[in-house]
Length: 315
Image 1 (cartoon, rainbow, N blue to C red):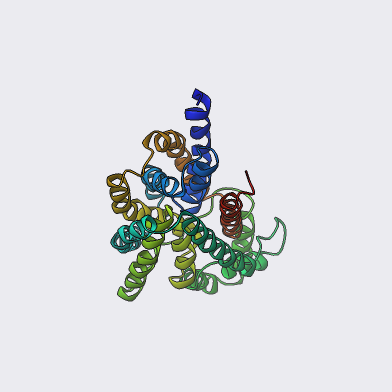
Image 2 (cartoon, rainbow, N blue to C red):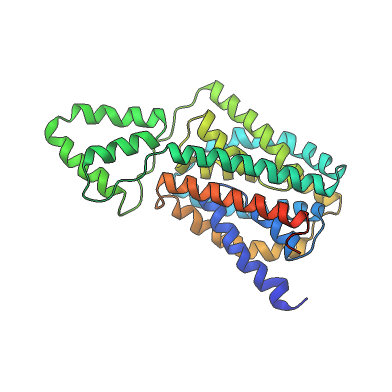
């Protein structure tokens, strides 16, 4: 294998993996598993193990950027991560006793279902209005796309401002869709019940992470939006915190089993670390609705690629 195929090409692919990781809150496993299967010709088990290994440094890079930008909920990420770390070794064990085709098919089905849920959310979210349109439409679109606790908080000052302030605030809302970074949502106030729900989401994500070699973000992000009402701009960074934690036990177990191709993993990581920094910055630029569509499309493509490759259609 030449230098380009062994190092340069994986590093370039790693940049794309990192950008998607930082932007969408996934560890990147849904991209890396197909890359390792298609480009490196690895077995399903080696693909998932090496992907899990590369996820940790990629996630750490994204977490640093999200924390600096305040686009994450650290305590919720910790709850998700601890729950996931408990179940990740169980997923690794299940993968080791399952046939390779079953591991890949389960991964594709779970990823595909998550894509469907994300598209459904995106369709319900009002599109961003064009510049020059009525400000009331801009506010309505923002409220429809924002979770309840954030939308309610925005309504209070709008009602108290009076009719003279409504026009100016409406113009500001419309222009917010066309230029400059999005304002960072306030940190949500979560109850103990919601933190417990987060830990339960982490349990599911951890099992999936260990079994199919992904970070679990494709499960955590949609469930944070649906169950905990966390906006996409905060869910991405929060998911990466959890991934950074929950992947560790699975990586240790996969390493002890000798399933990790460290050279291939490091080659991907060389590109994914800077890519994750870039992706985390893009969260404040890309509108919420577009983020959801990008995330759903990303998941759908990954699921299709996995299935096509596993059944030999891609060669």
